[in-house]
Length: 248
Image 1 (tube, one colour):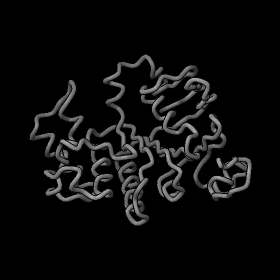
Image 2 (cartoon, helix red, strand yellow):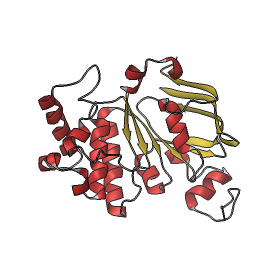
Image 3 (cartoon, helix red, strand yellow):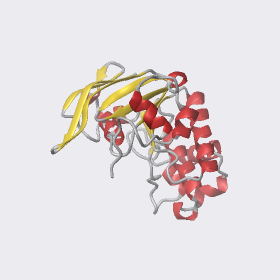
């Protein structure tokens, strides 16, 4: 469904992506791993068109994403942001229904609210939460609201940006389980960027490791632990010594 061909992106002298090649099959959950500052978020933004690659091509169902009509293109995606990215001035249900209330296919307010409440229930939140503001929620509840918003418009493709950052281990496990269940239920294509190995093992069908601007290794989750790539093994086991230099 998504294919990246020799994608490059630099910011001044900082060459972040140096020829990324990656294919993501429809209906699968792909997890991109790699250390902080390796370009995972830049890669995601390139796919969405928020950042334009300097070279290379990004295809969606075989069509050049750069030439797609923007509203129709973005309508295919849902996104769970790392920090939640909820609008403080909007009630919870208005955050969840944000897309539903806007654009060419905007829904009536009552219908959008009903959908939002149903999606909140799907992520384990009661209807009473709908009329609260984000500041009245815990971090884990805010993350669930972000997940409800990501799936509100029934997208074909869902991106998860560090979905468990800032959560305790129990809540992180809950979020991982919800992500896996929802992706399977919806038959969606998922792409997650994370350095949390518990998330990787919980939600991935396939894994790709981004290091030094290229995909260092990619393969099924079942082959990750036995793969011979030294970069991958150092990263997944958190070893201080190896080909990846620790920044001091």
